[in-house]
Length: 159
Image 1 (tube, helix red, strand yellow):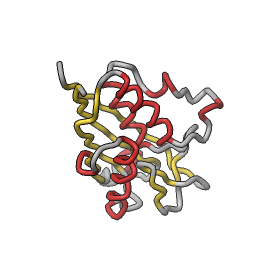
Image 2 (cartoon, one colour):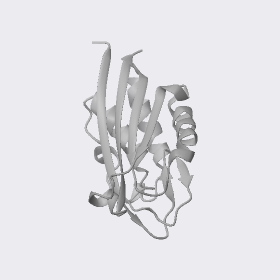
Image 3 (cartoon, one colour):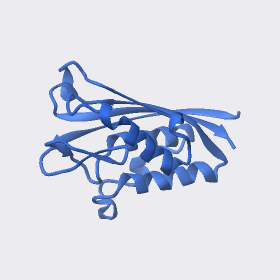
Image 4 (tube, one colour):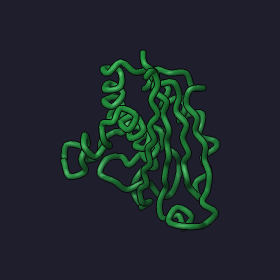
């Protein structure tokens, strides 16, 4: 078959004294995402989607949070490694579609920068990367501003 679809999801808590990084872009905010790496939920969801499309598990298999080697890791560098796996298996990205769920900050002003950041890393055009932002209408952990979540779907096409 010449196409494969994968989906990914990630959520991280918000906390003080951490940068808020989404799609490789640092976004001004009073809180940042907590995690073993830089906790970039958008990039993590994308990586999981790519791994899922290839039936290769999830990012925890490749970058376990118990391994000090990945402490503070730049998620875009991890994305490079996952994308290399995609290419080595003869696939290319058709498109990505993502949703980031956050009450605050407002993400719309940063979407173009996130698209550019991810497109550059994945060697695709910015119009192949959809990023939508929404709130959870004050419901659940993202609605209570305890964290930020991201969903991603990727279409891989045989190169």
